[in-house]
Image (cartoon, rainbow, N blue to C red; front, side, top):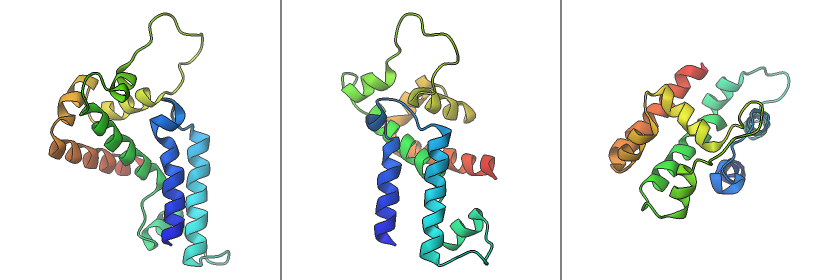
Length: 156
């Protein structure tokens, strides 16, 4: 079980901004990762075809969180780490950077920053308040826990 969790954690780390140069997982990638997660949990728990069990029941049976919730929590923990860095730190500059000029036609790409801003908006937070909130680690932990809990309510 520990070996499997290491593999899943390694795959989940692919969502880190360093890995995708600021990009974000597409929904298809997230769906594939989620199905990989539940398929392997079914093998570990020895739940096969005649036994019908929903994914929610499976996660509860294995005492696991969904991959989506794990990724949201890791994304926000990393963002808090970056926002506590000095103004000149490269990761902080990269996260706060907004390119100038015109963009291409069509819908804007789903970037890591846009994903984080959208999730923060669900909690009523702006980018400026996130920077001040991240300076206090206890408040940041509470915020991340509330954000993940809010996501649980939205997904049910």
